Length: 535
Image (tube, rainbow, N blue to C red):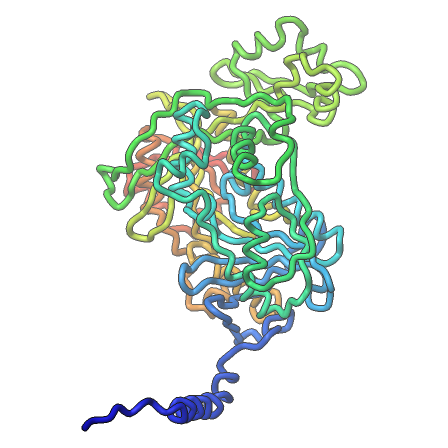
């Protein structure tokens, strides 16, 4: 006769007790390894790099904004390697309530002056409001295109423009097999732990999904405040699609603004490699409406003639509040018309049917070409203006990206150089800009942020010294890759190259070598710092 022995409840309790004893014994080790609440602050030791969850602290530095002083705490996710910048203003530890925004990156509006979305308005509007309220924090997340990256975002824009705005951005995502939103916000609770934040949030957003994401992490939301701006002809379709997908937006349905389409047909294509450089996958091409520089509007001779057919340009230049401050005939029978935007905005409200008001929404149309590099896994962006003819000498600029310069800083040196480069290109009529994402002269944004932290604390006297201590060379940007892509879009052998200064050219030996290797003859050097031209 056999018998079955039932498990004893005591054996389970005994195993649990042993397990707990092990945990108790290891608790000092766990506490030593685990960074506590508030481990990151204004005086975190330079050698400390607190970590919580998958979020690693990299650096802290000060940013002087147009609206006040902010502290930038730079973090990186160890899984997807994305950076997160926490822009703090005032007392974020003891304040009972913090004005807060979760902001996803948008290179086209924040760096390239694109006006086909409202991202840069929301970014600068939130920073301004946080400064006014006294205490707050903005989380800047590298989640381009609602988390799908710039390649997919650019293909979305290409499809939407090819359809003449008959499909929305969300429908384009669905066609590509994507969800409408691929963003994640788990790093926010990690950062709040490391920064010691316990406050309730007043969230500056039109998106209910962000509120749900914060509350799902156990973060307290006191209320929301909307950030909404008047639509433009170039972002009306985008904002209307956001409103129909659940965003709290009232203006798209109420505005009298009319949608504007791309200036030329856009033909979508499948991604394919460049024959001369298979490492680059040509992924998308579309038109970007770029905000004009210094209120300079570019018109063709025919456009100028039509606009001032009834009323002469001189009439709009007269009076105490002139709408036009000057005009100039430039190459290829085009005109620069300089407007007074404030006076013209006021005039348009009073006389909306006068066509002069259209100058307020006349952009520079650049064509965007997006490549995926299988070697670096980076995205390369080339902007082209006009169509080069055999006798043209296109104006070319290699523009290095800087994440901090996406913010409304008091010193806008990097943005000013981009604006000057754009001016040189549109004045000439033909040219190209290659955008390099490699912040910190190719060493990456993390190295740049640490460099800023070291120099700010007086531990180094210059970026060169910081880079030597970090073990980073002066310039690690891939200029050969740059020239390969530029050669594809600027087939002419002669170009006008825009550089910061003669000194920067001398230090960048790899730059000159890449030009020679790709048989690019620089007919003119345009130096931005001296605002001069050298043959």
